[in-house]
Structure formats: C-alpha cells, structure tokens
Amino acid sequence: MTRTLEPTALGHSPSVERLPARDKTVIAVLLVSTFVVVLNETIMSVAIPVLVKDLHITTSTGQWLSTGFALTLAVVIPVTGFLIQRIPTRRLFVLALGLFSLGTLSAALAPGFEVLLAARIVQGAGTAVMIPLLMTTVITLVPESRRGSIMGVISVVISVAPALGPTISGIVLSLLDWRWIFWVVLPIAVAALLIGSRLIQNVGETRHVPIDIVSIPLAALGFGGLVFGLNAVGEAASEPAGASSPASIWLPAALGAAALTAFVLRQLALQRTDRALLDLRPFASRIFTASVLAGALAFLALLGSAILLPIYLQSVLHVTPLVTGLLVLPGGVVMGVLGPLVGRGYDRFGPRALLIPGTVVVTGALVLLSFVDDRTPLWFVLAGHIALSIGLAGVLTPLFTAGLGAVPQRFTSHGSAIFATVQQVGGAAGTALFITLLAVQTRVGTTDGLSLEAANASGVRLAFLVGAAIMVVAIVVSCFVTKPVSADVEAVDQRREDQHRDRTAVSA
Image (cartoon, rainbow, N blue to C red; front, top):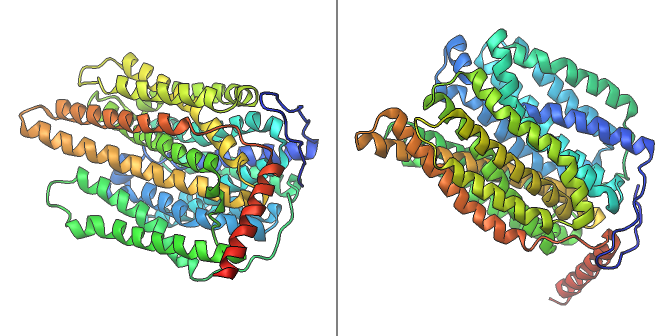
C-alpha cells in the first residue's frame, strides 16, 4: 500500500492524514513485539555474575551470552532487506517472533551454558528481523505528515527497551532464579505472536528477488567479524596484560573489514541489475547518509554509556544490581515520555530544530559524567544519566524519520536494514571503546598507586570524556540532516539517477 502526497511549499506542513484502523493495528502489534525482543539485548548484563556462579563458568565465557546475541544481530540484519521483499509481512512476522519465542523457551529450560548460548542465538535471529520490519512497515503505511509522531514511538521502543533490560533483570534476580528472566518475557512474546498472526495484514507487495549466494557469507564474515573483533578488543583490554595474543585480538576485526569491503563492492556491482542482497543506493541521499552517520555516533554513546554506568556503579560505588537497575530506570522513563513529543515536534519544525540541541545536550551530559570519582553521590550520576536520556530522545526520532523518509519507496527495506546494521556496529564500537579506555586508564591508575576504586573512576572519566569528543562530530553531522522532500519527488530523482547510471554502464 502506497499513499501519494503532493509536495508542499517550503515552510508549510502537509495536511495531516488519518491512519486506517487496520494500519494502526498492524503498527501497534509490531511495536509491542519489537519492544519485547529488543528488551533482551541488554537483559543479560546484570545477570552475568549470577550465571558465572550458577553455571560454573568464567566471566569471559558468560559475556558470550551478550556477545553471541549481538553477533547474531550483526549477521542477520543485513539480510532483512532481501527477506522483507521476498516474504509477506504476516509470514515474516510469525517467523521472527516464533524464533524469538522458541529461543526464549529454550533459554528458560536450558540445562547448561551451551544450550543457553544456542537459545540466545535463536532469540537474536528473531530479534534481527523485527526492527527493519517495523521501520519498513511504518514508512510504507504512514503518510509523510504523521511519520514524526509514529517514529517517535518507535524511538521509545528502540532506546527505552535496552535501558529497561538491566532494571527488569535486577528486579527479577533479587526475587527469583535467573531462569525467570526468560519466563517473564515468554508469555508476552507468545501472546504477541498469537495476536499478530491473526491481526497483521500483508503490507505492500512482495516480488521475486534472486538471492546472491556469495553475498551471504561475505555479509556474515564482514559484519559478524567486525562486531566480534570489536568485542574482542574490549574483552582483551579488561584482561591482564599479555593474557591475549595480538593476533587473537585484531585478526577477527581485520578479516571482518576485508570481507565487508568485498561485500560492499559486490553489492555495488549487483545493484545495477537489482540483484543486491543489501542495496546501497539509499546512500545516494545526503540526508540518509548524514542520518546514518549521526545515528551510529548516537548509538556509540548510548550503548557505551549503558555498559559503563553499571560497571562504575557496582565496581566503584559498590551498589547492588537492583539499585543499579533502578538508577538507570528514570532515564528510560524520560525517553519514553519524550519520544512521542519529539515526534510531534519533528512533524512541526523538522529535524534540525531537535537534532542540534539534542546532540549538544548529549555532549554536555557526557562531559558532566566525566567528573565522577569514587565518592560521587548517586544523585549526581542519576542527573547525568537523565540529561543523557533527554538528549538522546531529541536525537533518535529525527534521525530515523528524516533518514528513512529520504529513501525512495522501493529501497525502504534496504534503508531500514542499513540503519539497524550500522546501529549494531556503532553500539559494538561504543562498547569496545568505552571498555578499552576504562581498562587502560585503570591499569595506569593502579600503577601510579591509586586504589582500585579510584583507578576505575579515572577510567570511567576518560571514557565519558572521549565519548563527549565523538559527539561533537555528531553535532556537526546533524547540521546536514534536513526534512526530506516528498517520497514521490525523491523517487523521480532516483529513477533519473538510475537511468543515467545504466546509460553510462552501457556506453562503457
């Protein structure tokens, strides 16, 4: 289903169109389902120490429950652009949420670490499909005048669910066995699966797209190797000096970068005949490119701080996992409240009026958090995290809406997959960077005679300060994100560009 909107004069908002009840139902079910699956990306972070003791594993082994999940997302998400074009919406939804529910049940019943890790990978495979499917459906169904408001709700799902993961995990672990982390989620996932299988209608039309067998392993090696390598850098930095060989640290990232380069070159060649696994033509839009880059930097700050704050609170200030989860809860609530408001602000004022102040606030919050030490009061940490959440709320919605709104309709599924993939790589980079800086500076501090708490605090300060410097780049990039023209006008421009490219290829 495609709605045609007439281009509007500069500075005038298009008339607001109402969404049919059927479309509202489809989006609502996808929103609830996506919230449930995204929640699991961070739900294990607080549980690792408990699992280490209960399953008799090392901490580095336990971290694979999070790393394996992230790796699965990095491998599967690039393929979702192809899947969305080939498989009807309802069938793909049932497949994705069915895999997630199966993985959740397997995790709850897992007799040991190996089965639990396999279950997390199955969960990740289902999760990887949901975010691009949701974004593609919204861009297809929602008229341009309403996209900001709806994408504001999506930003709540994508940003608040990971923030709530540690809180829910901390509460469950303080009362029940670790298996209940999955038992609590399972009935919600199954209910969403049953309701969605009845109510969700197919959106748009599927088409036969040939699959390129070579691109699949290149994507898996490229994106998976890059994320694995970034995680390996972070893990090696937290180990004693010399515990890991340089080859084991840098080889996966180098192989991933090489495979990713080959993947990109192959997609550029295949997209000339519409056979690319992940079509890269959305990058022809300056707005999309700037949005993707700024989004990667924002997720670097979001997931980097999400992993750093619990470490600081528990290893430096010695608070319990439950208190840690409760301290990050207000920030998640703030993002949830602001998401729809920011979306309406986008519809009225456009992206830059929100993006530039939002990136400035995120930068300021990271600078504020760079002043923590081993005696910082909890209210200061809470204030810094809330400020960070306010800034991110003003950043994510405009980036999603403007970036995907600038992509012609036939490339929307690929644009959504690119956005989600870059978010995963950006988040992995943020995690690796923050953990590496923390570990290196902690080692320097203890060598200089500081206590372990004071040395850890100095590492946290450095990581937040570097994060603030990176966000300065995001401020500059945000200046290039404007409200896209009507999708029809953009599509005409893209068709002309494709025709020119085809003529050039023929003459060559």
